[in-house]
Length: 178
Image (cartoon, rainbow, N blue to C red; front, side, top):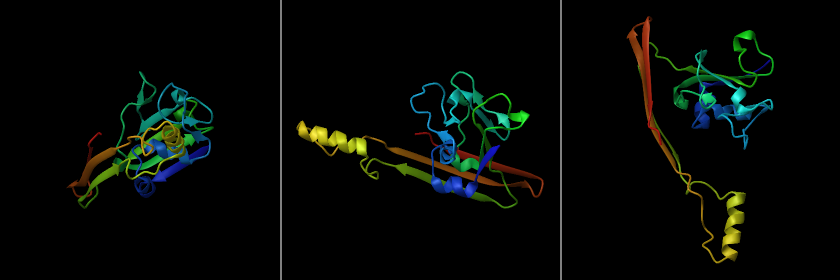
C-alpha cells in the first residue's frame, strides 16, 4: 500500500488552487492528459473515473462527471492523503487513487487568516510552446511578444475558535471563486 500524506504546511506553501494537484508529486500519479473522462489525476495507469474522493472519510464523488462533488479550498485543508495500489476494504469501490481531505478545525484560541492568490500572465515566463508560436508569428509579420492569458485572482479568509472552551469549536473558510 502506498500512502502519501501532505500536512498543512506543505499544502499551504505550494499554493495550488486544488490540493488534488499535490498528488502529482508522488510516484505513479500523472495528469490525466487527453483521456477525456472525469476530472483529477490518473493513478497507476487507471482513468480518472476510477478514483475515489473523500472529505473526512465521507464520499465526495460526483456521479454525473466523475470527480469530486465539492471542491474544498486549499487553505481549509488540514491534511491531504493519497492512497494507491493495494488498500484495505474500506476503500473498495474504486480501483484508482483514493483521495481524502481532512478539514481544519477550531481550537481553544481564536485564529484567522486572510489571503490572496494572484497569478497573472505578466508574472509568468514564456514557455517553449509560446516561444515557438512567437517565432512563427514573427516570420508571418504578426506581433511576437504575445503571452496566453492566464490571470487568476482568488481572495479568501478563515476564522476559527472556541464556542465552549475544550468542548465545542467552530471553523469557517470563504474563498471567492474566479
